[in-house]
Length: 239
Image 1 (cartoon, rainbow, N blue to C red):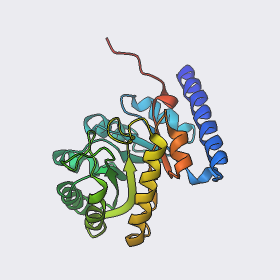
Image 2: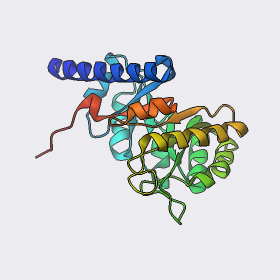
Image 3: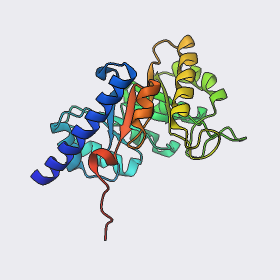
Image 4: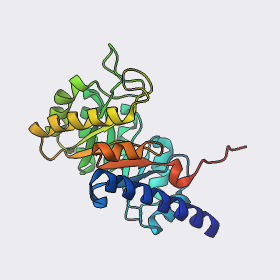
């Protein structure tokens, strides 16, 4: 376990250096950007190591993995983010541990989250997931709502009991006009954030950027970056 902690600590320091350098290059303060470590596929023991190393935000994308892990680490001072596409039949479980759901992309999900948050006596933060590759369906390849749908969905979240509208999230698209243009995609998200904040001034969170493109996200103005493999490594295949 000592070797694993050393490995994670080394990687975490490198990522911290990258974020600090990106902030300096953009003329931003380091504290303006929050690191969320994506712990999907990694064991609860890694989450404990991260906590020992000072990480306070972790993210998961599958409830069947996240729920037992969050329960095993419930004694730790962590904020849990849910970042995957969320089925309504998983909402009750997710509301049990997630402090923030970053993948809100349809009204049916807002209704389900509100119902369960009220039932659990919790306030759950929500980010509208924006699909910059949305086609005619108004949906993205990896979930999300088209930019044109942000205002309506944002109003719905803001007025839903038990929910708090915190801002926007996106994943750099693999198709469409922003494919391979992460900086442009993240700058577009920042413009959409500015629009949202006119109606909802407290919705200041902008979650963008991952291991490969966190610098572009910081340059564009992201407040949160979601980093997995750069901190925890590429997990060996099982079997």
